[in-house]
Amino acid sequence: MEAVILSGLGEVTHRERFPTTRDALLDFAKRQLTPTTHLALEATTNTWPVVELLRPYVLSITVSNPMKTRAIAEAKIKTDKVDALILANLLRLNYLPAVWCPDAQTQALRRLATERTMLVNDRTRIKNRIHSILHQRLIHAPDANSTPESAPRLLLLDISQLQQTRQGHLKRGLLLRFPFEMKTAMARRF
Image 1 (cartoon, one colour):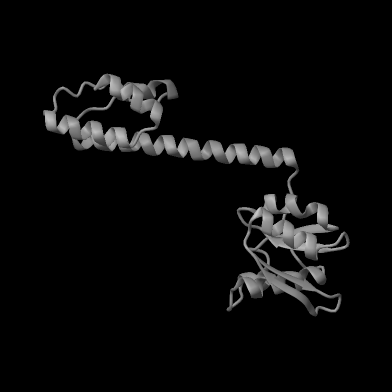
Image 2 (image 1 turned 90 degrees about the vertical axis):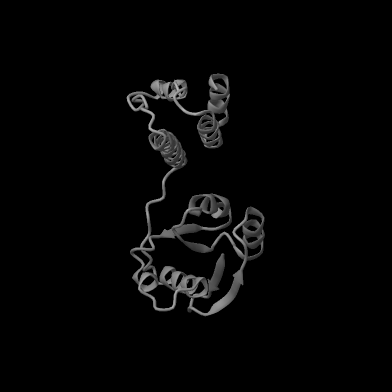
């Protein structure tokens, strides 16, 4: 993370680069931030945990929208050092386009929705992989897309039509790609 502290006249009074870890952020906050500090951050994947960690040390935190911060988005030289200086100057001049800061409950709901989306994507990827493996081996797969409860039907396929070596290959291929619970169910079937 690149940090720049400006005076009221826009002069750089402090510049520092440090890792984006809890300990490094707290160390920086305790050494450099004051209750009268105005802080600017660019919206990224870890913005909200950083905001919550630094909020007690500053007067205000503005999270900038990088797509609306034209000076940064259209810069020919794009480095953290340059971006930090531009953010600090835009904040000092009160010209920094901010994003809406969600409350704790909204953040928790967003995290929950994101986690659910990732799990659904994982489930879909696994089901598609199973169908691909079965299709490669000319085995008809039952429709397991109607409900989540019907997905285990994929595990009960009759694969006796395969030769012994192909059966072993299929078993290994499926077992390597399944979560632990499905491995246990498949091991009983094979």
